[in-house]
Length: 74
Image (cartoon, rainbow, N blue to C red; front, top):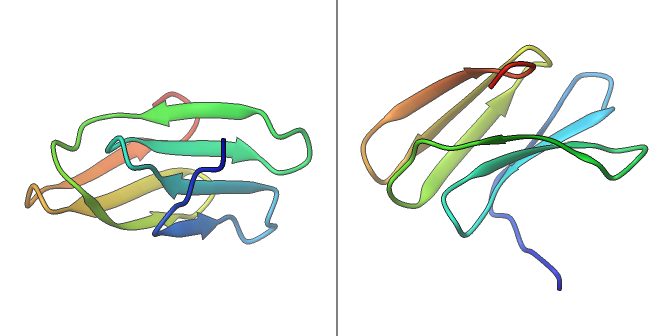
């Protein structure tokens, strides 16, 4: 199955990618291994933007909320 993401953010070193899914979750992936490292939940509608600096994941959605997570602990 191929998943399409509307918004993708990467770390400055491009070792990790963070993107939104159609299921209103954000996933953090290790680029080298293809392993999903974290799944961030909290939005109740479509996610419109994702930002990721290697430590913090932030997102904004149609549910009119901004969510912020620690990338390592969720």
